[in-house]
Length: 187
Image 1 (tube, rainbow, N blue to C red):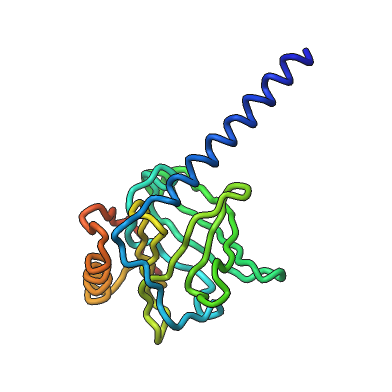
Image 2 (tube, rainbow, N blue to C red; image 1 turned 30 degrees about the vertical axis):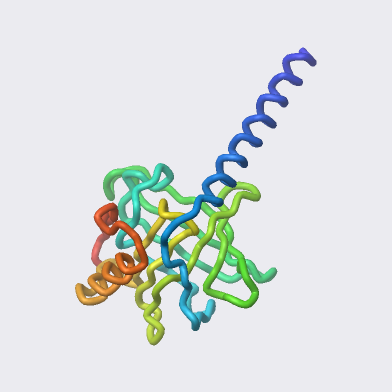
């Protein structure tokens, strides 16, 4: 019995090491993207609910609709992140995951890192932002695998959507890979 438990523990440790190596190799990949973040960023204005308008496809959100992100400040200075949505349709299973974000660079508040699993963090860079109203944002990571368009409302104005698409292209992102997320209109 002890040998079996030891083998299971070794396998679990090995799995964690392989996952960590996979994440670190993804983070080190060089890109030709312009990852310059916005110059002015006020986390207090950013807090609250955001609707996911568009994103690159990835396994952890595949098939999700009505996806939102809720950001709130915790006492320790980190940011609570609650992502939620429905699987495949608004009648599908509701899913919610809680993580945390923290500032990645004290001299650049628009550069954060987010974790939904233990100590594995991914870059969360505020690339474009409606500086006046904080009504829309373009978020990228440090690789060309992740890109999000978020809005304070379930539908983004056409001119804002076109602006964000243009800026994403200028930064080197392939906007043809963006999946447009189904959202319900506010009542």
